[in-house]
Structures are given as C-alpha cells and as structure tokens.
Length: 364
Image 1 (cartoon, rainbow, N blue to C red):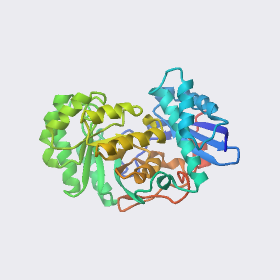
Image 2: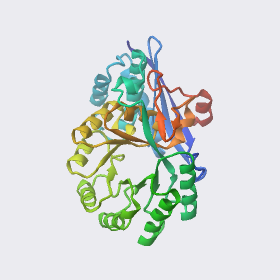
Image 3: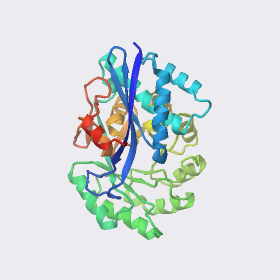
Image 4: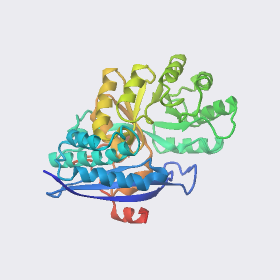
C-alpha cells in the first residue's frame, strides 16, 4: 500500500457556541487547514490542523510540503513517515508550524490504517472503553458577566452535561472578590453534583494562583487548569503542592518531552494533551503511556470528534473536552448521550468531510 495523492483546504470557521448560545465574541472566526490523503488503491484518510493564526497560509503550505514527502510511502508505517519528515525538517521541529503540519498528516495516516484494518481507531489502539465521559466547554468563558455565565451554566446542566468548564482570570482589572464571586455564582447555578473544571489559560502568577485557589477550594472544583505559564513546571508544582484542588495542564506543550518535564516535576494531576500540538496520534500515544506509568489520567483538549476515540482507546483516559465549533465540517459526528460520547464502529475516525461545509468555509 502506498500514498498516492493529497489535497488541502484553508478554511475559516465561525467560533460559535451552540451548547448554551453564549458566544464570548459573536462573529469570531478560526482558521483551519483540512487535509485528505489517498492511497493508490483508493483509501482516503482525513486530518486537520490549526493554531496558525495569521500564519495559517504558511501552515497549509507546510502541510502540502511535508505531505509531498510522504507520497509513495506506506501509510501503515506512521513512525517511519514521522522519522522521514523530521529528517527533512532542517532542525525546525519539535514545535511550531512543523509539528502542526505533521499532526494533520499523522491523523490522516491513522485514519487510513484504521480503514485498512476495518477497525475504528479506538479499537485499533486498545479498545478500553466504548463510551467516554465528556465535559461541556466554551460556554462559560471569562468575557461573560456573572448573570450570563450563570444562565449558560444552567443551560448546560439542562442539556444533560454532568461535567463543565468555566474560566477565571477575568478581563479588565478584576479583584480577588470578583474572581471568587464568579466561581461561587456558577457553582450555585449548577448545584453540588456537577463536576466543575476551571481554566486560567496561563494568566495568573504563581502567588495569585495559590491565593485565589485557596479562597475557592470550598467551591469543589474538579481541577484548575493551566494556572500559570505552561513551561514553568516548578511554579506549577508549587501551586499544586499548596492547593487541595487538582491541577490539569499540558495543552500548550509541544511534542512528548515537555510532558515528561511536567510529570517529573509533579506539576499536574491530570495530563491534558492537545492532539495537534503533540504532533498527532503517534506522539499522543507516547504521552498517554508515560502518564500511565506515573498513575496519571489523560484528558483531552478540543476536537472531541477525534479525541473521543483516543480517550476511549487507553486505560487511563478520563474525559473529553466537548468544544463543538469544528463539528460542522463533518457529515456526522459521535453523539453525546447522558454526558458521554458514544464511540463509532465505523473504521478509522468514522468521519467524512461535508463538501458543502468545505465550500462554505473555504478561504480564497
């Protein structure tokens, strides 16, 4: 089996918020590069990548350049192809556009691998769980006022979500009281039994995180996420040691090695892996195995339509972030039933791009 051809699309997708109808920035758009790779015998694999921002055109070019190097190779050997791409990179990896582009290719390779085997990805990689918990994300953003956030939280609960994530590090110049009030308002809106996560997006200093984190310990957060600069492993470890609330982190880390640094520093209780920044499925699995060796669970970051299968494949998969703004690209995506994603039986990712959606969101 050999790879024969590829096509890419540069898209601009609305960053809407369909779970609670609570968009933080109405009309905001997000650039995405979509990839299709096909074997000589007609098996198609799909992938995508993002985080390119103003450089998304360059990201698309990188996907095409690296993808061209994979043409003629056996898609059932993703490690061999990854090694070829690294060797051709001129030392520009392990982060940035190289890794983002490599991720799209790796996703497509695993899609082909699953289809060739006649297995969905979650079964191909281990089949630990046929359904996985998921938490509503993107509706309780910091740009909402307290009343808007409380209303959105109640809507998420009414939709059957048992887990949801809010944000602190509020905009402007919030007082400590403002931050504490937001956490209490949302907890009051959803009651004591919902798992409530909280994302800081690296916006607090270490001493802020310890101070505010202690003040909201009685809110019963399931985790505090990305509490300070993502590469300040010693600082995150200080916060983790000072608080009873578990700490999640890792979505901003590139590749495998920084996750080792975070784990060795005892900085995180929940290892959050971003499939695109990790570089694709192949390195994602290495991070998951490393976390398992340290008795740590894995949680995902965005693109639930892909991540649900990876969390379902591994024994230490805990929960999937359900941020649905990219679901509109596909004909069909795995359903959410009673706060869980039901994993597909269709081979590969079980996803197919919707040509009408690609045409609607295509740039240029």
